[in-house]
Length: 599
Image (cartoon, rainbow, N blue to C red):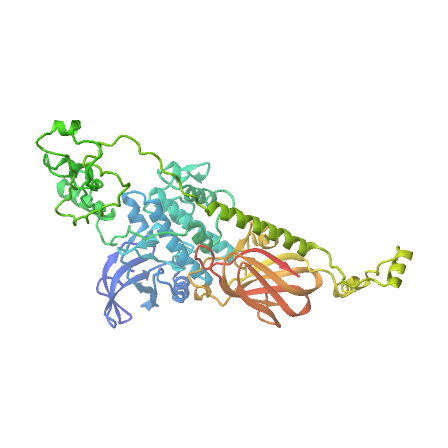
């Protein structure tokens, strides 16, 4: 069909075909084109053969999904019997091109696959799946933006049949983990027919399963190695939706591995110094710039560089009182330097430092003669002066005794039995003596409040719990939901993590349905949550109609959220509908329920 569509062809009177691009699907050609109406570059896929009609229908469904990480489908149509799909232009290199130079660093592989998984989770919630993920459809632009192309279209062209939502979500999730494996090792773990045409070297296989990434590349973290081994293993383990994979990979940092899609690869071997220099420059561009180092000078080297005799900077010695000493100034130091006179120690201050304020002259220590200027003259100890009496300790002891006595009297007054000041009459005293075995009043009054509780019915017991999601019939995070009612506050069930408390704008809410052991009288619900904020509503209804029925209670979530009903109700199921997410200790918008009790 290349005779009908080629360079210069104008599709639908609007898109002028410019240059051909490589394609890894049979019967599909990819072109650079120009939208002559909006005057912008676009990417056109010409569907020359195969399942053209299903592919065009898949492209229309993919156009309904809006996410910055998914290549936007701009137009779908037919031109002289040939189908075409117009999308935005892809400016980033594919994962297959990025690993040609070697594996990515673990943090970059985590970030690239995490962004792709977040995009496919958005598509999954709109009922659209990729089902044909491979290294050539994940692109990273020079500014760190991840783009996933071929959503739903490639699977239709390959003839991949859609199955139930759980199986399709699991397929995309496993393929995302295979992309993670490729980023960590530079190898692609193949397991389907369309994988044989990939441009990435296949991964080694042991016992029918890919060799763990840590055995191929050095420095692979334990969590990523375990995630790949478990998900690509023989059992249905690991995450089952892209959203669960996002939770396994988060958090991740900035992406720095992107380059232009049209950047040519330099030839290796005898290419001369020019090719080697270009390759080195490209490799240097991928590496982060070296930190700028500030020249520093140590204090020791500054002292070593001072000329002989120059005063060194520092703290000057303490000033010495200038008084006439008791002993004569004819000691050995004076004899050693007769011309210099008594030794003095002026403070040495550098010119660059501010002048040091002179030390004030201390008060006389005694009434005798003054000290000499030589601080080393005095070696004898002065006789100890008498110590003055300090009454502080005595006062503290007295106060402590007074406080102790006061505490004793207060305790006796508090715990002593009440004393009746009235003297008993003769008749009273005689009656008490004559009938000492008079029985006390029967405790009939305390037993009366128990009657309403017995008539209220059995204590409500939670028989089972399940999650529900208005946008997903399977529910949200259905695994481990029993941890919310297992009686162990150290375990908890948690929802997906969102970027906003309103569930990222993807839905109005989600909830938990509590099935009681028979019809019971319920007067309240207590939630123990790791976090604060958000909102929850309680109704005696089912997960199929979570907003129907009377609103029994609502409130803001906290670590201990007690929701008491205005009047007890008879119910067999209780629904907790969360319309806004709380914030956990890590600052994430996620619901973490440690325990739920019904009273």
